[in-house]
Amino acid sequence: MTKSLVREKIWFPGIDRQVEDMIKVCAACEVTVPAQKFEPLNMSTLPSDGPWTELSIDFSGPFPNGYYLMVVTDDYTRYPVTETITSASAKTVIPKLANILSMFGIPKVIRSDNGPPFHSEEFKGFSQYMGFRHRKITPLWPRAIGEAERFMRTLKKAIATAIENGLPWEQGLSRFLMNYRVTPHTSKGKAPAELLFGR
Image (cartoon, rainbow, N blue to C red; front, side, top):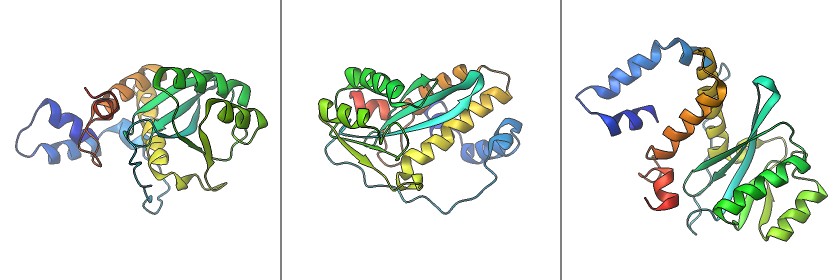
């Protein structure tokens, strides 16, 4: 992602190598690299129906002051939308998700893990009322939604890097989302914002 973002602004021979060298000596980057290594993630097939038809939802945190992030990602465009929450209960999640859907539209499918807000009767009723199919991934195996899981790792790293550099985590989040949404994705060759909004 970093190389793509830099290449949008400037290019010169050897730029990829220079970016790699800079990242290798970046103290904030080193602190936020996960120690545990996993097998490569198996990415799910891109939806063919177009933008905002299949979404994935997950949580990240806790962050300073006890906040969590609810992250909704469009599986087709990879466009992420975040909401700050203090609880992962259905009573907290449903209004936040309803707000996101009121802005972007109601998808055909929303994928989630089998966490507490998603196996509640309230969420089942919400999905029926809104008219989307709720698809639960394999319990205790969040890597079944590989792209969303990869995005969550990158998001946590960006926030941790901001904190390490003395910035408020919210500022780090905003900066990361702005850059991520306008950087061309390798699977489509276009930025998530361009794929979702057509501009």
